[in-house]
Length: 289
Image (cartoon, rainbow, N blue to C red; front, side, top):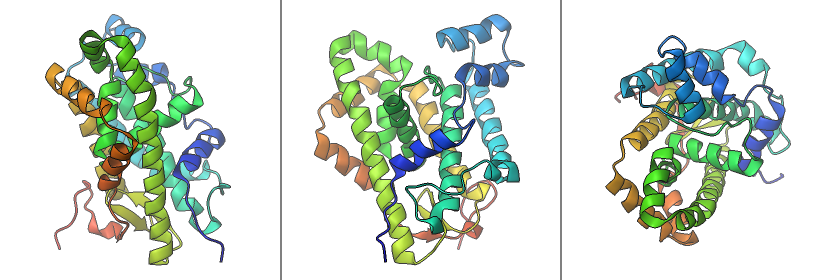
């Protein structure tokens, strides 16, 4: 029997290449989300300058919650599933359908929530490596990987201003040119290990990765809801981070070597287990046993 290996980095890359419309245009998305909430001038400042001064945190939260709920309906619909490729070269045929559906969901909701909470770059226009790095960091945050959330905090617009003033632009750029990619690659590798273990050890043909393990069977909002909320909370916290918190985080991250990064990510990737979607309530919380 051929050994099964699931390559998460390749899966995300191939989905982007093969699924039309999976990448979301930042300007079109933000104008659609905020068109009834902001004046034309305010909306232009958000889109063109990344100026969120006129946008309350409550407004961002409301937009994010609405987006999560809409995506829930989209991902469970036949039109979304029909738009996904029937196979990917990197995956064994027996696990393709659920894997592609779940990661397509992650890529889509990651873009939407990141734009709402201040992502300044357009995923449709990024270079491939930059886009993949960002997406894997956002997906990592959905899995509760703290290293991913920390690096995203340092890559935010707010942090950029603080760090350049404190440590100098050259030093900050040097750190941020290397660390995000290393963390993203480690996240992809460890999630691949988790998925592979779920397939091999549990003997199941259909698995999807979720917070805390893998799920066998149908895709449900109750399963994915907590993951979207996890990312939302991380992005929200980044907006509220103080200068002192950002500076302290930078000093920690900039002092870590490759082994520190690997250990940090690995410690947050829980051993694979099969979870039953029936254990989750509609709001994403788990039923009490």
